Image (cartoon, rainbow, N blue to C red):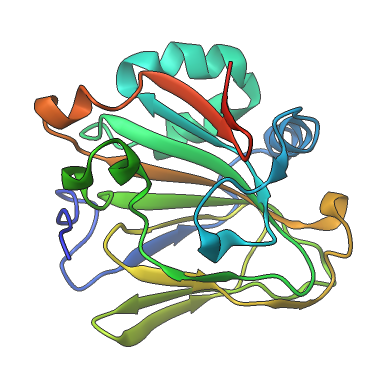
Length: 216
């Protein structure tokens, strides 16, 4: 398994994740939620089979396309300003909606390998918890390293979790709450990559994808 090491200064080698509560103002979180639920792009997930039964869409972009991302999704701008690492140059952004009786199976994020297998894992993955219904049961984020569980993080609304990109992870099944899409466990995820120039050239500057393919 190929992976990039943790970025300088943000993690010690024995630290796998950071969690920051109340990371954005309530009105900003409400705008993000509305932008996700109101998007015409929202549908069954276009990601790998581990995301079966979940909803979302994805946006791949390079750092130089950040103004275009802000223009297309202005509600996401405050979150991106908080979480994007300055040394990373390629990103995959995806809203993730998980409902009752659904989960995300264990996987390591390697989404940009679609554009070149040598890109490998992200440096880090950021997860903003946009909506966590009060009656939600389940839906914890579990992180694994070298076969052992290193964290089980109960979702907390308006918390930001950042974890090492080489970690196997999963979302446990939701057993109650999240009865409809509007009531889902909603997170906004960013995979953050540091790609060498020759690999970065293969990554689209700005590309939206849904289950039906590339979208304008």
